[in-house]
Image 1 (cartoon, rainbow, N blue to C red):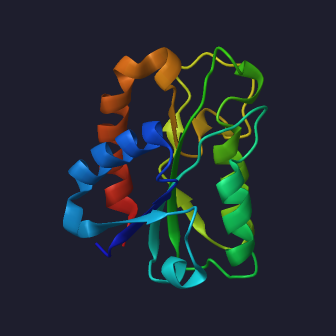
Image 2: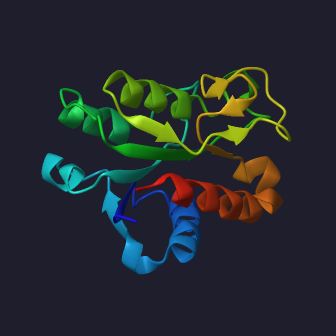
Length: 168
């Protein structure tokens, strides 16, 4: 497996905790962490396999740091690159746009020819709507630390096993 670039905001403590669990499963030598707050085009180009941490903010928006980074790669072809997405949301507090950020990012990647992997079942969640939902799956790993923290470790472990199989 080629080295995986995990892009996330180093300022997000909850996300960092989840990333550390993922790195434990993937192995430190297989992963490079990249702070999306400071990421450059050159850093992005180093990888063919990516894990993007996409929390959903407010009423279904991408965090500011993703809004600032995406223009850096919006003119790139992402063909030949593979992306696994995960992100946090609050299905009770924001049931009408639970993990929408995952859906927004998947759309961005797919429009540029990138491959999104790591779809997970919507079973076990209770929400009204999500841009991340396609049929009976999310376009990535949906985590709800606020309401389902006890399920997080198992969800990460199972997801990483599947993602690893699909990275080159």
